[in-house]
Length: 423
Ligand SMILES: *Cc1c(COP(=O)(O)O)cnc(C)c1O
Image 1 (tube, rainbow, N blue to C red):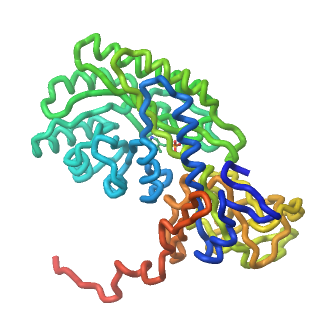
Image 2 (cartoon, protein in one colour):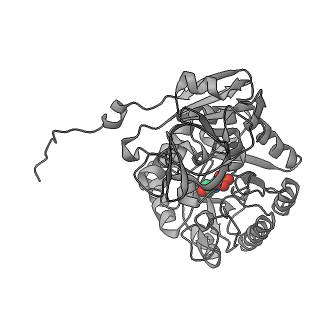
Image 3 (cartoon, rainbow, N blue to C red):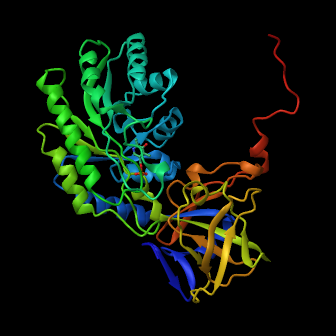
């Protein structure tokens, strides 16, 4: 069981609260998060980088619920955002502009303007085109925009799925390594953008520190070239996120080796190192609790149908991710080999195939582990299914932090009587 989850007389608890209590009170499917586990992960990371000039900027897209953001803010984290919507969330959760870095490969002019007006710490620019748009926006509103160039360092990572790799040549992310100096030269003539640093982000679910060391070396090398040409004085090196966690695939990043990689960048005088962990801080804190609706037998296979589907949790369908599945009420030896599937009309709507689980019956609760990251934040309304509730547990207390959507929520912004506009 991940930290924060224990059994008492067979029943699964998140810290001091039984998951079946939450399911009874709030309904299912429901995401449950342990506040203490998030605190512990933050402290583990902080301890690993102690003494280094490292600042944690939580990647909002992993879990963007306001209460989670507020919890991480209370621990001292800043944030890394990738959209105007995430800017809105960060500001709502009480972050100051100076706590925010803005990444993303396709920022719109409107998003750039909002971010500059909010006084973000940096815009992590990913292309020459974006830089030109940012220069125009900043000029128009009369602010010098702080820019970190996101470099594509051409460092390959071995993640469980190709969709979670971002730092190789030819991928859409970042400015190619061999263009960075040219961009820095161009920037030295631009009046409304100021180059303050370099960034890289290699992918997600990285279990080995070596790629971080390679990226750190690449950024340091570029920094020295840029400063050697007197193009700018760089004060930020941002090594992105991607720190792998256990349970999902069994491997996890060695934090002391990771800290050694950061040390390569931190050895440069006068720099602050930013890191952008998302999954690492929240994945293991969360579970998805779902009720078994039906069992059936087909083509020699046992099929367990749950009330959660791919719209609630898409990672198994999208990334073939592995999540342990437990009974909430029994720690009996797993004896049932089954496909665990959702109600959505797609054959891709499954949580596990051919998995050995407890012998469950309709009405029983199942718990998918390590779903605190990229779970609720990727949920959709596909099949017109209202999105689930989110619950935060803190010690012996729990609170609904996101209400379950209602059917009315589904159609609130729609009309059956179009208000036609003549061209
Ligand atoms: C998604 C993302 C992260 C966080 O990745 P994790 O694997 O959740 O740590 C960090 N930085 C950037 C730029 C990202 O896009």
